[in-house]
Amino acid sequence: MNRRALPLAAVLALVAPQLGGCVAAAALVPLAAGGTVMKKSADGNKAERMVKPVVVVGTATASAAEPVAELAPVEPAPQAEAPVAAVAAVAQTPALSADPLDGYGAMADFVLAQAETGKPGKARRSALLDQRSLTALPRMLPCGDQRGALVIDLDPGDKPFDLNDPPSPAPGLAERLRAIRGTGTAVVWIASLPESRSKELATVLQATGLDPLGIDPFLLLRPRETRKQQVLNRAAEDWCVLAIAGDRKADFDEVFDYLRNPDGPVALALEQHLGAGWFVVPPPIR
Image (cartoon, rainbow, N blue to C red):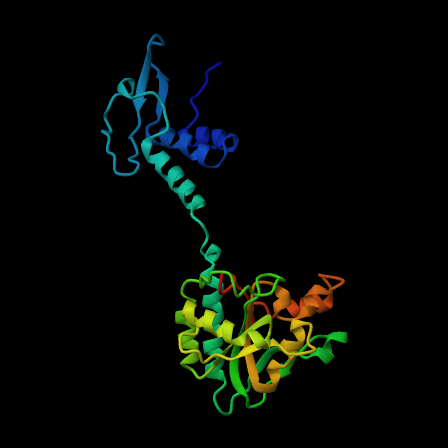
């Protein structure tokens, strides 16, 4: 029975499904680059080679009339290897979101936008939760005509800020805070420290360059206060809190430490404020 050679396109169609991803690409490029078909001569004794035009891949060139017998064995062409290496390099490149400054950048952009929104005649929303709403559906406190403020939590995790630890400020944060102060927005520091330590804290912030002029106010524990939430609740008395930055969700409100159902309606209502008033960032001073 006479057998006819399959067209090159058919060969590729049969082979491709058995190869995966980049392997298929590397294997099929040489086949596509220069195919040959064996044809029986009229006398039936000799096989004639029909040379198909060679397709140029990349910048390399080849003669269309080059005999098939002189072609190198089929191997993945160098041009096919380059994309594979490039893909591997891209896969190993760290995502931009891994940059710890991203959180502070998003925070600064949000506060600057809110400061613009807070001009006379425009409504503002506080980043502080209305504690009375936590028994139903949480909502934010309304803002009056108080001065806008950014509250930054200094405590690392659930531990109080250590005044005796050599300070190292987060890179680029001082410049972002300078831009925020330029809008008239206050930068307010909060920590689980007694108010009697405020002078020491001011010295640390000046030394780091985060408050070089020593003008930023503090939210610290007063006598008889035992929880940082009590301190945070007082912020609404003096400021319209535009944003809160901390290294854990409970820095925004202690309700995060007491959620029974992390996927319940209360949790979902709280999550919507992440990145829109609440910003999880690395500690500002390490």
